[in-house]
Length: 220
Image 1 (cartoon, helix red, strand yellow):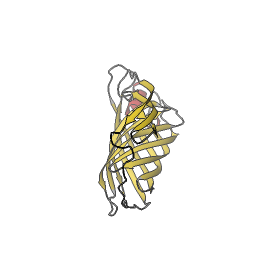
Image 2 (spheres, rainbow, N blue to C red; image 1 turned 90 degrees about the vertical axis):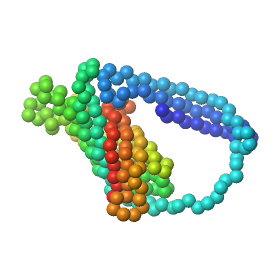
Image 3 (cartoon, helix red, strand yellow; image 1 turned 120 degrees about the vertical axis):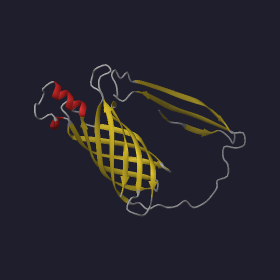
Image 4 (cartoon, rainbow, N blue to C red; image 1 turned 60 degrees about the horizontal axis):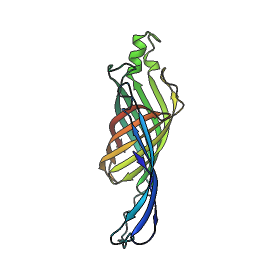
């Protein structure tokens, strides 16, 4: 679910607000059929504050974090089936290596390389005797990517745009996106291991779900 909200202060007790909402329902190609549903709506309304909409601010100096560089790695796994109702599930292995730079204290911009090996594609090529003896070569995808992570304490919202330079034999998309979350188990400013996080992402090719991935990431 994604939503926007714009508010306007009418007075100390009333706000006028409006926005746009998007709900996407999908199984991330985990099973077929994947009857994805997109719902777009808008909202408009009023917000009432019993005391005041402009309370006095508590002042204080927030800790200023350095705009440091990090070497990061992520190992994820997802599962896919081929176009058969209730067919077998195949693992998809997705390691990533990238560098990041923190800016404005809580946010990170990053860039690196993604790799994905699709066992469902490998099984399809083997079963249909396509590229005999070269099935593995046509079952992996690699890309360069860049993105941004918005950090809120131990919780991060991640958006990523990737451009493949090697495709599987079944998909030839020019780009894909990843969107998801990181939850940080470890957050250190010093030491060898700076961060350890659990990650959950959805990979989409031209906004069509491809695979849900879950994994662990670390930063040095």
